Image 1 (spheres, rainbow, N blue to C red):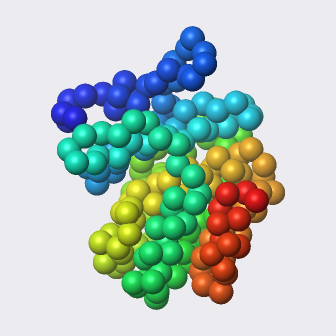
Image 2: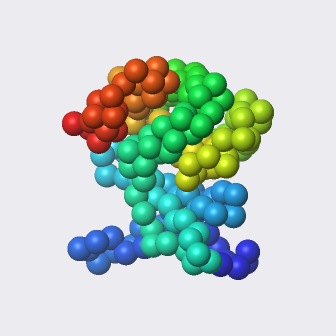
Length: 188
């Protein structure tokens, strides 16, 4: 994909089974390997849907919906190879979870769906963890941006939500069985 291509156009897609298209509210390229986008969702006025594309073998994938299980498995891989650094990254995510507020207005949504708010302002918190970029599938930038969007999505739709935080804590404690972690990550 050329640099001049508009990311919002590239991430616009037809809604399955309907005669309409979804155009992202936000789209950002991450590390040249991912494009992450947020769309208007249906669960609440400020609900967001999260989709991404991944560069694989020189081609961009179809638009995908990330699942908790995808990033959780990546964290487990990182944990096996760099446990202390991965736990620090999880600490950062848990602290962000604790301070994340739901989106309650269009102004808040515009402010929050901004690369500086979502990622750039957080980079100094994990700059010493760059070794984790070489472990697993996803870069820390991708994981941080995805996590921030998932936090916003979950808290906007249900302010007392806890599934995301529970999964972070289970991963951090490393005393969770694969079955328990997968059950949490897949809402079972």
